[in-house]
Image (cartoon, rainbow, N blue to C red; front, side, top):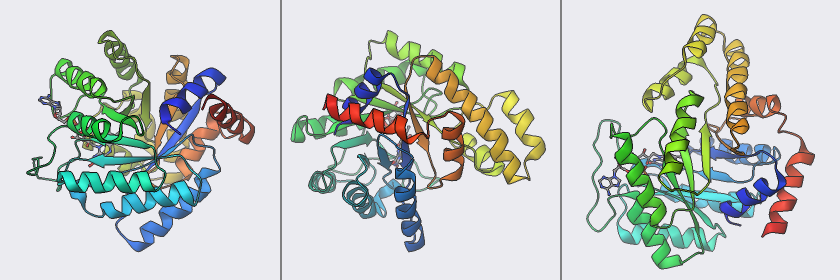
Length: 309
Ligand SMILES: Cc1cc2nc3c(=O)[nH]c(=O)nc-3n(C[C@H](O)[C@H](O)[C@H](O)COP(=O)(O)OP(=O)(O)OC[C@H]3O[C@@H](n4cnc5c(N)ncnc54)[C@H](O)[C@@H]3O)c2cc1C
């Protein structure tokens, strides 16, 4: 089922819904861990799960395999990330065929990170340069079979002028994107004012906010710095004094992230996308804090999703 239809069903039911993102592991142990999490966290009631695509195309054959397992073995509606990094057209075409064959109907089309940490991004010969070209290629070859999401950046990307980035976002939607998943953020005011600007550009597709729960203080700081986002002063003031106590960090972090999600939900956005980092605890704590873990609630939402389809 398409993500846009799932979102429409949640809208109709008037219930907040959520989804989970998992990254592609690099070791056999990581793979086993991912499958355990898919199974265990599937019972939390996500509307869909995302599986990332590795920068540079390394271990991306595992993405298509994990997508197939999530769809077929665990019955989870799955969205496969697909990037242009290191991908000639034939590789893109092969990945889409595998997604199609495994019953996956949702793709998050991305330009992709550079293959290495200190490398700059460049396209491969016969490949694509921008995510919008990948979106257009998928539409050209598969019509409406795939629902296609694209990435949005409330706090910018690549040091680009925010207005220019909005132009580029519009181009991805005009090429056939039907929903937007955002980069993580911790400052809700920045997110909400960005949403307003996106709407002023005439972009009407659903915007799904990306939420990163807090697992440890070191990881919280590292990830925020990595994607270059602002950490509100209150978050630093409350977390920094307990930074060496992971249990305290998770408890305080839970309250902060719950408050962030409540403000998003109060603004009328009904879907939350959690970057799980392939771990269950911090995400579960936030969902419990939002009273979203009730099986009855999630089952009702899934039932109305089926009715809409
Ligand atoms: C929700 C989410 C999930 C992600 N998942 C993955 C993943 O699985 N694997 C991975 O490797 N990375 C992932 N990323 C990271 C993403 O690939 C990088 O941030 C990448 O640098 C940008 O990707 P994009 O799809 O936004 O690219 P694009 O929208 O193509 O933009 C890339 C750059 O090109 C510029 N640009 C776009 N169009 C034009 C144009 N017409 N003219 C000139 N410049 C233009 C943009 O401004 C930007 O600077 C994810 C990001 C998000 C937010």
